Image (cartoon, rainbow, N blue to C red):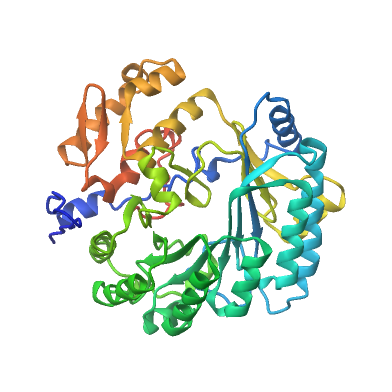
Length: 471
């Protein structure tokens, strides 16, 4: 199988990718929305550790603006591919109780932040945040504005299930204060939609996109997934054309991670319907080619953006970062996580809330932060995080910059990894010299594999089946 991706101006020099190479590198590995990854969190990181991290932030002479993530777990129907923490219900009265507990959790932060902490990024994820009524979304937004100072230049986004909104709701969400939308689409093919139990006609999404553009949203994202059951390069090609015709500002293109042993809904997907790795790489290749030809910038592993979008600008300026929602414009930003199972970061610490709703409620009923696990990063974690994020975000690594920032001799510190890099150079995944390396166009297909060699935890633990395949 030969793959060739074309740029708008010239062909990218991608060598043919053989089936044997695909098989060799179609391995299990993390997506690196964080390092260390969330599966490394420990229960020894408790509420007291989180309080200490908040206190340390409060005592800093200068603090960067905060990012806030709010997890709303409810969905009206089950999508078989979904690996998110969700609660499937049609009882909308449950959202009222959940909102009250979110407000309790927000209030707990007052003792540490007061009412002067600036927020420059807010994201409502799920589940389906639009399970909340417009009044509940507005009440949550108002509560956040009471406790935090929302920057006038901030990015305020919400994930939208197209099946739960209409033109009127989109206008109302904009009036509340959200300036960015993310539509969950995944695929427009009817057979694929049936196979994953998510029916949403193209015309419905097209109408919503038109309204969102007219309402003046600053950025509209569209989520797609390749590798879903019954997908083929031919059917996915049509979906790509339909997406391009709607001209979203950003496109998030994710590989389907089939882990039925971890996520029960995926057990309803027939294994024989899942496309093989060679078809998945063909779909990824096709998407890259078509999006580039349509004028999009290839931001990184799973994101595309129009040149004027802030994500593309951050890429050009070297300010790109990855957090638990994917690529972000705000590097090294503390993230306050609100809601069941939400993951946050304060300083050199990660924290995660209780995954079960009853446990989450119980903590808050007793006046406690609902933290059940997390991780205080070691110096080695911090160094390796910097290296991995440079690879994932910038596609290059300069040894001297890491040496100056962390006072190490890169080649001595990463002696084992330096030997492994030679293998990637031989495969034309990277171009390596004495000062560093950069990922080639071919290497972007395997960028997770390149980053993985710097993962100390994976070196010590070869059980990687809990992760998805990298292709």
